[in-house]
Image (cartoon, rainbow, N blue to C red; front, side, top):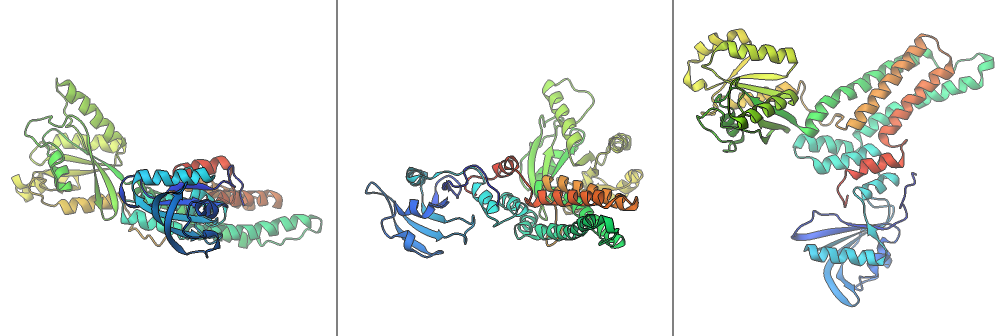
Length: 459
């Protein structure tokens, strides 16, 4: 069990979002949680009640009733935190909630820090660190894919894979260290060929997890998409059509969009952060438009995907030059030929054939928008999302897995170069250490404080 500052304190916090609602839930956790609530709950002696029972009554301070509430008891260790936990369902007035919290603080509780309930669940062995972090991801999930990936983590899917890797390494490490005790007899307890096979298998498993981070990052954070092109190419109309609303100003006047406009589009569980930029043209005297163009260029440089929108009637050379520059810069882009309703499709195909893959649509008439969405999805997902498999979404896990992979490679090199058993055992111990950092078996208080500080208060 890890020990941290304030471990013995009883903590209290509002577990539901602040603001007026039908009810609010206040959570109290710690050794004295039940006695603190019992002191202001005259309706019944809560300390004599069984765990997982619900009680209705008044919260009273100095014989003054504050609210009629529903109290739910969760006795240690059968609770979320592993400690005694009391949840008080009260009326949804922020004033009442603050009065109740103040009453518990007066009894001796203190306000919980962000994530402190989940931190205690980790410290008491109810969750490992990857499961705890998945709780935060689940709370923050805004799509079905993000929800399912986080839920897989909460249920321990990722932890199980890491545990299996770690146990296999621990077994070999123990045998290698046993060899050192019998170094004078020149015996080997570890089959080197079998160890090589295990290392190859572990490298493959670790590489799959590392590679899943690209997909995981997309699921967790979405994809930034810059909609760029010359003025009046139809960028704002395209944004409005994708969103089915008039978010951007649409005008025949070139340079109408003076700044970037950002909206979010959900396509099959992936969030695309659409950025409608000011039209990029070589010559303009309008200072506001110049600022907008510079911001457009910056958005284009940092976007994960660029939709280059152009009028299907314009000159091919302009688009060709942009494509060549985009390829030179290594940008990820789709060429979108707009205003298809104004030309013959076959003639358009012939005109733009030299540019390769061009997507034709009419933003104004909402033609082929479904195809555009499919192409956007395909451009960032080279594989279908299978949320029953482990997908790494956390940057901390990703970097630790890279260290695991490097240590595995070093171990493999050591075996190939016939290094002494003590050096090979040291490399295996490094692998075990980095895996332990992910699950929280090896950690420190500063690291825990940083991880849980990103949680909301009350969780």
